[in-house]
Length: 228
Image (tube, rainbow, N blue to C red; front, side):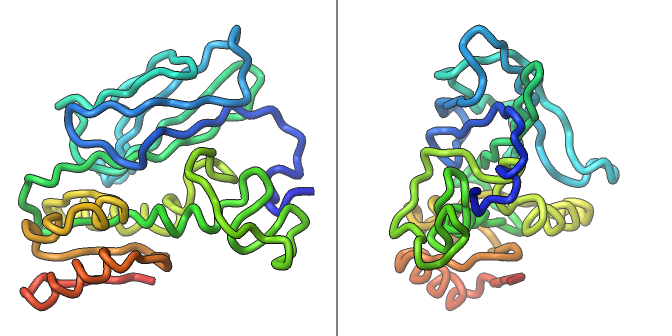
């Protein structure tokens, strides 16, 4: 019995992950699917999460795809947190999160999605950095991979840790850029074109580069909001 409680119900699922946690305009990311056989068509509905007059999301596209399909972040996809809903006949639906970011734009806020923290708690396959497949800390993993779906509904910690913050901020009409903590680690200049950095409800794992970048930004006068 897996420590991921959703796996204790024997339900077929179509699940997946992208080859990156974020994409810039014009970039493509590869989709990896598991759970549905090659002769079963998987439908993907692409939602940008936000306020949208209280609805909470906008569907940008609905299409069919198979393992190895590449999503291209064309100009129609605004910076934001997206959920890709996977559906297949006689399978439970799940989500894949993906952030679309634009490091060149100026913004009131830059929302940092804490995917490193999500993954450390991810129990998909039985093991996280906290528990083994038997639910005990003694059998936990010493390392984890992003080359796997998230447990539960597949959205990681987004829907309950970060989505309420994004929805409230977009309701206020603020200009928002989006990034992951990987983007912050790789690109310290991400903090140079925003007035505030916002971290959602659970941002537990930081690299040294992330911390150095944020501390330098605060010294320059960038606001820091940590809601954890």
